[in-house]
Image (cartoon, helix red, strand yellow):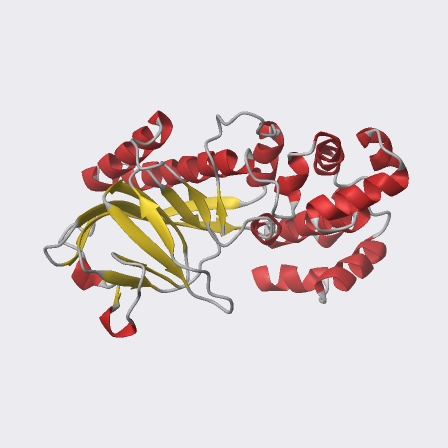
Length: 322
């Protein structure tokens, strides 16, 4: 889990927002259901795995409990906090830090009113009001993008009123979700997109500890190499060429890139190139066309590299689409 301090903090490394946009365009972000939760202590709700979630605390406080092979300690959420769970994990929210299994309710239709936009649970204790929602990362590049994100992205509001952008988006989200006018479903999906992207940007501007492309973007010289790889994924990159762009020696660059990104330079370049090729094939592009667009001299060379990377042939992806 990673907590992100305010993006206005002094000394925060700058991130290339255009590069962030480029990476995120390679995944198809879809917004899902949005609702308001009105809760009274004591309460505890479990949300099954299957979708990524976000929660914004309008009033009161809550605790989030993340399940999995290595469960994290419960995390306190206060007014103004935004939490994102990008990896579709099973998780629970509760009014207290201690989670008693027998007291947990699995979220179901019974918790929602007739409009399905308000979730109610608990009793007459301390009130908590949340805005919750789901979203999905689609496309074959999603795995590469998600690999750079921690299990939780926590943007603290420090118990205060949310920043104007967050307050505006969440209010507009609820208005559209409840209004049900023409195009409201599409509007809600786009607003969730906006919320997630803006939250990712705020987090990325302050986080360099989690290896991956996000951390690499926060380093000026490594960021230059990453931008080049993403701008020309079809190019046959060499460590020497990337090191020259970064203004570093070959050995120093290779070591620093691997530390920041979690993969060696050419390994990352190959992974990104073939991930994009996989997405092309899933969208119906012919194998020979995907090979050419990926910079391979022949379909055979492309197929060998593709199978070595993914464990199955390009034609398998095309066959799944059919």
